[in-house]
Structures are given as structure tokens and as C-alpha cells.
Length: 177
Ligand code: PRP
Image 1 (cartoon, rainbow, N blue to C red):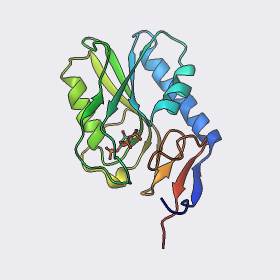
Image 2 (cartoon, helix red, strand yellow; image 1 turned 180 degrees about the vertical axis):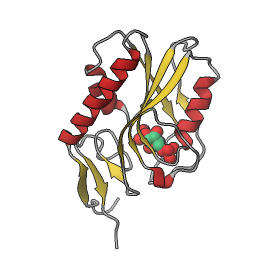
Image 3 (spheres, rainbow, N blue to C red; image 1 turned 180 degrees about the horizontal axis):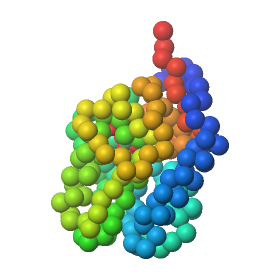
Image 4 (cartoon, protein in one colour; image 1 turned 120 degrees about the vertical axis):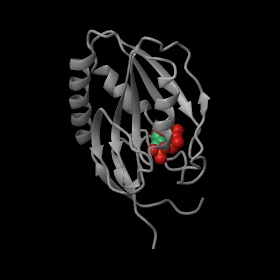
């Protein structure tokens, strides 16, 4: 790859921290007596999930699932599949899926269908960011942190070609030209 892209901060780590606190409070209210199963969608959700769960001081379980990714480059292939599945059954469980971003909606729609077939007691979605301008399939986000503009965002778990996941802020990449 050639020169590094130029990054601009969209959401500071302080703004993210405040949003995660709000989300945790809402989730706590709804799930504190339910012993929920939180399913993080790898890899992007790892940082958000870790910060969120640190604030959830009630019994819960953690699982991860990995879907086929964008691969190299910025665009989704549109073909989604599970590349790393769940290790525990979800039948009868109150399941909360944790995503870093809903973009076209293709990944999460696929995942919701996939999980629904396994008959959880309930199934909801928590997403840190939403980019509705790119949506191809309607998605209900039960707990949302931020709506973001139609720019390529990185940081706080989100990558660009596997880069920038480590950034504490969420930044957007300046378009060339
Ligand atoms: C990102 C993100 C979502 C998905 C959203 O994952 O974490 O899972 O894309 O895009 P969509 O709404 O257009 O389907 P990605 O495939 O980049 O993998 P990663 O989490 O490993 O970065």
C-alpha cells in the first residue's frame, strides 16, 4: 500500500466513553435479571464489547462470532458467511448482539436470521455506530451509540484494511482528490 491516508477525528474517546456508559445503563435496566448472552461480532466489536461489559455489573455470558469480512479494501463483497461459529447453544437464551457498525446492513441481517433459527428467547442488537446512508436492508438497532456520516470510519476497533483498530478515537479517512 502507498501513502498513509489522512485521518480526522469524528468521535473522541471521551464522547465514546460517555456513549458506552449510556448504552450500559440502558442494557443494565433491561437485562440485569436475565443472565443474557452477549455475542460480539469479530473483529470490529472487540474494544466496544470490552468497555461495555466492564460497565455491566450483573451476571452475563460472552460469546463471539466471526463473519466473512470485507477482505482487502473498503467494499463488502455482499456475500456473508460464518467463519467462526458459536461455542455454546443459544436456544432459550436472551441474546444481545454487539456490533461496532451497521453499514449496508448485510452482515447483521444475515446474522440475525442465522441466530433467530437457533430459537433464542429474545434477540436484540446493540451497535456503537450506524451509517444509515449506506443501508441496503432495513435493520432495527435496539441500542445505538452514534449515527455516523457516509465516510469511511476507523479506530476503536474499526479497521481500514486491518489498520487503525487500535486508535482510541473514531476517525474518518479523508477522501483523496
Ligand atoms: C464490519 C463491521 C460489521 C460489518 C458492517 O465488519 O464490523 O460487521 O462490517 O457492514 P455491513 O453492514 O455493510 O455488512 P468487517 O466485515 O469489516 O470485519 P471486521 O469486524 O473484522 O473488521
